[in-house]
Image (cartoon, rainbow, N blue to C red; front, side, top):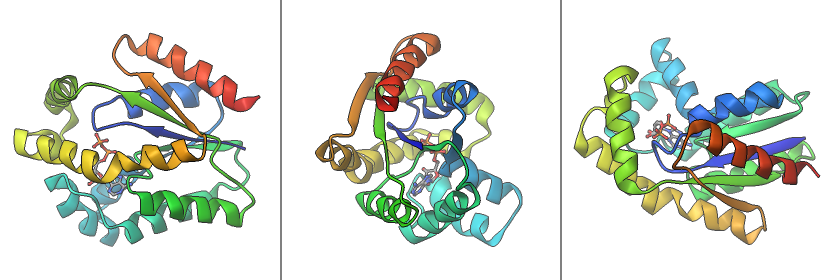
Length: 192
Ligand code: ADP
């Protein structure tokens, strides 16, 4: 199995690039943000719980996220692999992911991190706010909070994978196609 963690701050382009990756590699896309938004849309208990955290730009508690991802992995054990988008977002989540994959004799093949300067992230999120309908895209306070949470709680996850020799970083500024080209090259090296 090819199991990739696509990593980067809010607005780095993980969702956009995941769509391109799954169009040419048959991987199951697990986006925790999309899964939560689906739950919110369906007004499930999980959705009600996640909504207040998400709207403020805070992280949903680890145990909730981890349980949701575990269910998705269980449902897709016959897949050719997974692309994890927006997960893991804490070192605790990264450790839990390793443990749940190990249970099935699986592991992460590599992390691909998209690097984008903070000002560019803010510009992109504000542009996305016009069409995303996402409350967490709507104002400076929420956007700044998400970036702060990323710097404090999520960026150490990169180090976690670096220590395992699984870290690749890619410049996330440029055309969508050029960035995808670099991601695809990185994936090829993971496959061999
Ligand atoms: P972005 O990367 O643009 O911030 P996402 O769709 O990945 O957007 O996430 C939106 C929100 O969903 C996060 O701010 C957080 O509240 C919640 N969320 C998504 N994934 C996780 C996760 N792995 N752990 C905790 N909260 C999460």
